[in-house]
Image (tube, rainbow, N blue to C red; front, side, top):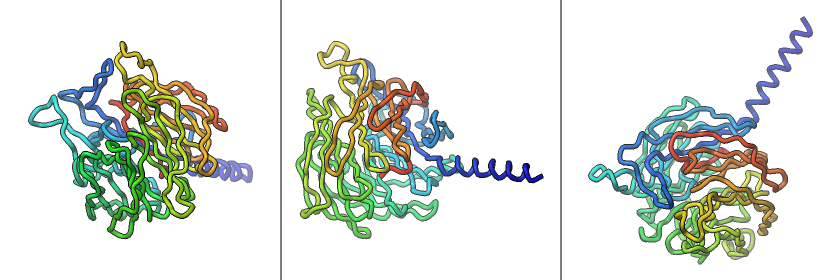
Length: 385
């Protein structure tokens, strides 16, 4: 009897251990858009968009489930999905939708869908503003901020359990600036807002339901994703670079010294067109997702058959490249496991998610690919900023 009890305890502890190690990530999959020989177009009668729920706490990475009819879009940075800290909800923004008057065209979308991750079902939608794109949720899980590419504004959402509502939409810049994403400091008091069309980022102060611009910084063309370090002392902005063939750049912003929000470094990534970028939960690593010529027509001089995943070690405000690895084509976002040793990357052309190991900065392809319905267009892990 004693042996049986001990065995039961061991099994119970093992189950608890697996539960503790679990880490939810959500991939938003766009069924509308395809790319052929460098030309992007939308399908006239596509099936509904979906999300794929993953567990990054195990290797091979596990598919937890799929939820149908969750509008999303490859237009915009691959940070249009966010997960509450308790992993109960996902918020998924959709920046574009098919024009009901002419199904060969797209028009701006203004919906954010609320998904119950435990029940794996859609709870509802919140209407924000045109071009709903990059989302971030505060560390306490009580507020979400949504950037709008087609409106130049940011919406504030309140989160109370499973209730999500629009509090306020704050205009910041003209729609032509293509305001794309807002990253939040750990204390929720500061944001970095990327303006994709005019090569600028706004440093904003957040107080209650107020958003005010503290300063505006000039950066490399096409700033897109942004992320804060866990201590809030550093932010990194990923910039696509000159669309005619310039390399992508990581811009480092210092928030530790006075004046806060000062550019202290720029790192050439070595490949063209940064799309996605994410920092590991411990702040040690930054992964950049590069198109690297994979979205060019095959007869273009810059054409390459695959993109590249590039890894950097972060030491304070210093970024050092440690490795790179080939990925699919028209690749989008990346997400880290909690310990930073697993990295997943989305490939739109292949309609899959590729799984890598990060061994002290050295990337290795595990060989695992996770097929998804539609093109994986945005991704976020529950420990993402």
